[in-house]
Length: 340
Image 1 (cartoon, rainbow, N blue to C red):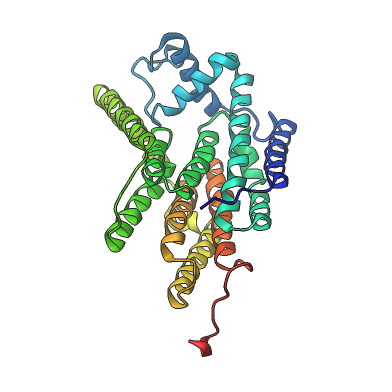
Image 2 (spheres, rainbow, N blue to C red):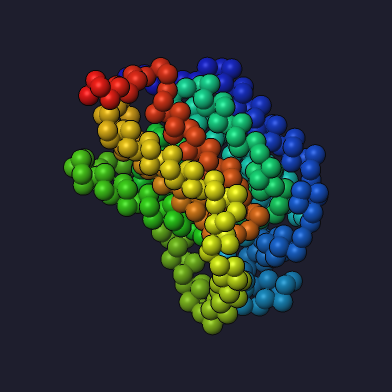
C-alpha cells in the first residue's frame, strides 16, 4: 500500500510556519525574555564541556559539576556552538533554529494525526504562540524538548514504537518534563501489546537507538553516583524551590483550566471511540493523548513560565489534533444513539 504524501503546498506551509516562528523569535530576541542568569547556568557548562570535555565547569565555581538537570543539554549545546560559534548570541541562535525545525516537524505530524491537511495546518497555527517563541529565545533545554516531542510523534506515527519510547526516555537526559509522558507511553504500549497479543517487530535502527539511550543513561548514573553528595544538595534545593507553592495554587491558574479541559476532551474522545465503535480505535488515541497530557501535567505542576510551552502550546495542540482525527469530516460519522 502506497502511503499518501502531503501535497506540495502543505510542505511549503510547514516551511513557512517554521520561518514565521524564526522571524517572531528574531524580532523579539533579547526582549522575550530579557537575558537572565539561568541562561548563563546552561551556556557556560556547555562552553566548558566543549573546550575541556569536562562536566565540571570552573567558570561557575562548580568543580564537582552542576546537578540541577542532567547533562544532555550541555552536550547538545556544546556540540552546536562548536560549529556555530562560541558566544551567547550563537547559542541563542541554535535554540531558535532548533525550535523552528520543531515547528516544521509538528506541522507534518499534525497532518498525519488529524488525517486532514486543513486540520493539520490549523493545529500548526496553535503552536505559533508566545510560549513557543519564549522557548526559542532562551538558552535552555525547552528548545530541544519541544523538537524532541515532534520527533517522537513522527516515530510513533510511522510505527516505530521502540524508537518513540527510547526518545521519550532520552528526554529525561535533558529535563524531567517528559517523565510522566515516557512512563505513561510505555504502560499504554505494553497494555496494547498484551491486549491484542501482537507480535513485536522493530527496525534495526530502533535497537541501535535503544542501545545508545541505555548507554547514555548508564553513563549519567555513574556520573551522579561519583558525586552523590553534591547531587543530593542540588536536588534538595530544587525540590524545596518547586514545593514552595501548594498544588492548589498551581492548578488554580489558566494553565490548570486548560489542563482540565484537555483531560475532559480526551475522556470524551475515548468514550466516543469505545461507545460507537468508530474507525478510530482507542489504541490510535491513547498513546498520543498520554504524551500530550503528560507534558501538560508537568507544565502545570512545574509552575514556571518556561514550562508554558508544554501546558499552553504543545499539549492543547495535540489534544485539538486528536479531536480533529475523531471528528474528521472525511471519515464515517458516529451513528446516532437511536441507530445503535
